[in-house]
Image (cartoon, rainbow, N blue to C red; front, side, top):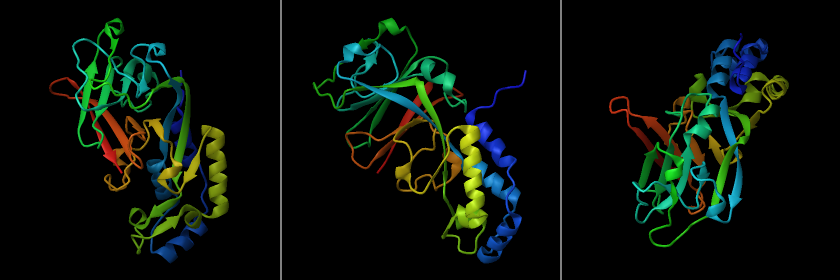
Length: 279
């Protein structure tokens, strides 16, 4: 039986089968000093095509209404007795891998079960990440040690998810070998506005969702598996950091973004996580 393609695979298949205007590309090459071809453009577009899994967010005023161990942001953590709430930390969220793994098209989630807990200090400098893989019945709602609570719980429901594809509308010169390597070149200029519009239409039809974006503010604010967001260019603006695990804007830090990552150490076989902040 033929394997069913996911949204990202469908979109890449559209790009592979697309007919570009070679004459228009040749004119652009002459003006920018590049040596682009239809095939090299296809490779670029597929590399920079970004997939975002957007959960449905539901806020709860009372922690008692929240299912123990479910994937959520904020509120109070559901911890086993073996784990302590870190002092002077904010609870960022907990992530139940059993809920997330079925939607992981990148095989980025390191295990089929278990819960990651993320804590961060107010300045985003220090963080603590715990991993638990035991009975959910052993979890208990844990209050902040100092009595604080920064935000009510927001459930990240993946049964009500949406899948969205994004592509930046401008290409920096060094990625295409342009003479002016720090200049930004609009895709419409490179391949032709009418051709780009036709490609957009095909991607939206075949993949269900496709958006050209021109700045980071156009991207989702809470998402799984998209490209980690870095306001200061910490990733060198390369696709090598893609995909991430989860990213979101913390309500306690204005104009900042948190990128969460999870993995299993191949030597110790233990599970780890990390938080990076960019402002």
